[in-house]
Amino acid sequence: MTRHVRRTLLLLVLTPLLYALVGADQAASAHTELVSASPKDGADLTKAPDHLTLTFDEPVDLADVRVLTMDGNRLPVSRTAGGAKDSVRVALAAPEGGELAVVWSVVDEEDGHASSGRLMFSVGAATAATTTGGDEAASPVPAPSPSVRKGLVAARWAGYLALALFVGGLAFVTLLWPRGAHEPRARALLVLAWTVGLLATVAALGLQGAYTALGGMRDALRPATYAEVLATEPGVVLASRGLLWVLAAVVLGALMQGGAGTSRSPGWRVGALAVAFGLLRTAGMAGHNSEGSEPTWGAIADFVHLLGASVWIGGLAMLTVAVLPRRRAGELAAVVPGYSRLAAVSVTGIVAAGLVLAWQVVGSYDALLHSSYGHLLLIKTAVLAAVLLAAYASRQWVRTRLDLAVLLRGDAATVRPFGYSVAVETGLVLVVLVVTSLLVTADPGR
Image 1: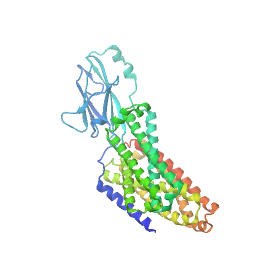
Image 2: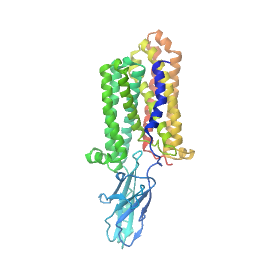
Image 3: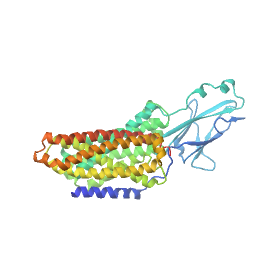
Image 4: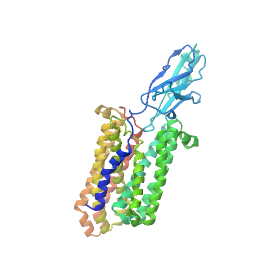
C-alpha cells in the first residue's frame, strides 16, 4: 500500500469525525405537513374570521410558509400569540357571505420539498353557486409543476455527477496520478465538472424557487424567484454551494498552472480539501439524512456515502477518459493498482453508510416495501449490486492480467476487457445517480 493510499484511508476515517465536530442537523420527520387549521377546513361560519391558524407537524420558518387567495394575492403570515414554532397566524380579509378559499404551501427546511393544499369555509348565507359547487370547488388542489419538478431532479442529477467528477477527479490526480494535471483529457474533465457544477447550482436555485412557489418554468428565470428562495434554508444552502464552486475555480486554476508540483503542495491540498468538504457537506444538507431518531449519525453516514461515491465515480471517469486511452505501461502499473485499492475502500464506505442511511430514513421493513421512497431505494440497491459485479470483474483483471498488460506495453487486446468493465461500471453508476436525485424529492413516509 502506497503512502498516498494510506493518507487517503486516514482521511476517510478522520473526515466524519471532523464533520461531527462541525455539527449536524436537528431531527425532522419526513416532509412538513399540515396537522390542523382553525377554523377547520369545510367549517360553516356565521361571520368571516379575521385570521386563520395553521399548525404543522414540525417547526416551520415564516419565510417557508405561503398562503394565497384564489386570485393569487399573498396573505400576511406571522407567529401565533403563543409563539409556537410549528404554528402560524394568517391575516384574512374575508367576505361577509359566500365562500372563503385559500391555498397554503410550506417548504421543508431540510430538503426543500413543497407540500400544499386548499382550505375552504362557508361564511354566512352561502349563495346557490357556492352550495352546489362552483369552479373553485371543482378545481384541483394546487401542486408543484411536473415540469419544474423534473427540471429540479435533472439539475440535482447534474450537480451530483459534477460533484463526483470534480472531487473524485481531484483526489485521483492528487493521490495517484500527479502527472495527470498536465494531461489534456484529465484537465478537460475537471473543467467540465466545474462548469456543470456551477451551472447546475444556479439552475437549481431558480427551479427550487419555482417549485416551492408552485410556479412554472418561466418563474424559474425571474429575479423575484431567486430573491424569495434565498430567504429560505434550502436557498441558503444552494447559494453557499454556488460560492464554493466559485472558490473551487481558484483551486482548479492553481492546479492547471502548477501541475504536479502544485498537487503535492501542502497549502494547495488544504485548500482543495476545504472546498471538497464544503461541496460534499452542502450536497448532503439537501437530503433526508437528518430525519429519524439519530440525525447526527445519519448526517455523518450521508457524508461518508457522498465522499466514497465521489472518489469511486471520479476515479472511474479518470480511468475511462484519460488513463486507459493512453495505454502506457508505466502509468497502468502505477495508477491502476492504487485506484483498485482506493475503490475497494470507497465501496466499503458506501455500503456501510448506505445501511445506516436506510435504517435512519426508512425506519421499517413496511416503509421499505410499501412507500415510493422504499421502492426507489430498492431499485438503487439492485443497480448498485450490478455495479459491484462490474467492479469485481475490473478488480479480477487487475489481479490476474495487469502484469501481462504491462509486459506487453499496454497491448490494446489485453487492456480492452478492463476498459469494457470500467465503461459498464461507469454507465451503471450514472443510473444510480438518477435514482439518488429522485430519492431527494421522494417522501420517506416515516
